[in-house]
Amino acid sequence: MEERLKKVEEAVLLTVAMLGEEAYPVRISEELREKTSKVLPVATVHSILMQFEGRGFVNSVIIKSGTGRSKRTKRIYSLSNYGREKNNIPYLRETLENLLQFYHASQNKIQHADL
Image 1 (tube, rainbow, N blue to C red):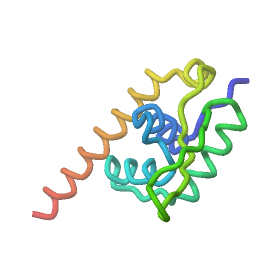
Image 2 (cartoon, one colour):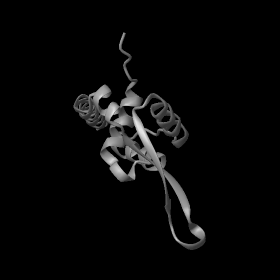
Image 3 (cartoon, rainbow, N blue to C red):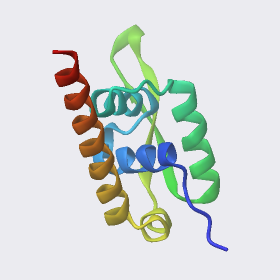
C-alpha cells in the first residue's frame, strides 16, 4: 500500500521545491505563513524535513553565511530525484494551488459576510 503525505507535509515538500537555494527551515516557515496565513513553527518544519531526509525525499547541505563574528551555518534542503519521482511534484503544485484558491475564496466570503 502506497503511503500518502499529509497536507502539511505536501506543503513543506512543495515549498522546498519552490525556494531552491533558500530552502531552510526558517524561510520555509515564513513562506508558508505568507502564502497560507497559517503559522507552522520552525521546529515542526525542521522535524518534517528530518523525516523526509531519512526517507530519501530530500537532500541537505550545510553552508556558512554571514561574515566575521556573525558567521552562521544553515542547512539547505533540496528535493532528491527520488523525492521528485515518488511525490509527483506536478500533483503537489496543483494541490497547493487548489488549497490556496479555496483559502482565498473562503476568506473573501468571510470578509463580505462581515460587511
